[in-house]
Figure 1 (cartoon, rainbow, N blue to C red):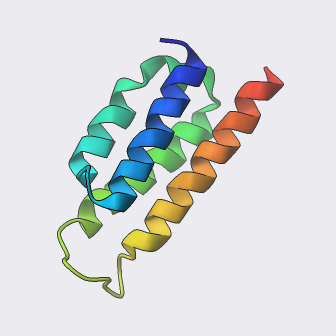
Figure 2 (spheres, rainbow, N blue to C red):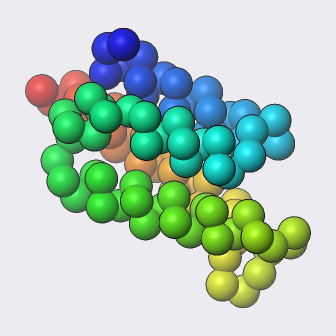
Length: 92
């Protein structure tokens, strides 16, 4: 699977996560499987993604938005990560 396909898979999974057809754990599992993408991006991308995924999994424990975890903000941050990863891949 090419790097672009891996990034596209994450984008699709994020849309599914937003719609409720994919659980946070499923998204995290898919993200962890994109090893070629992780290797192609600078280390800071992996650090940020790891933090976002940890927050996402923690937010899944709550049924509503809490003061500590806003799932909406986490999903928006994941979209920003995907967008920045796309730009990074275009540079290489």
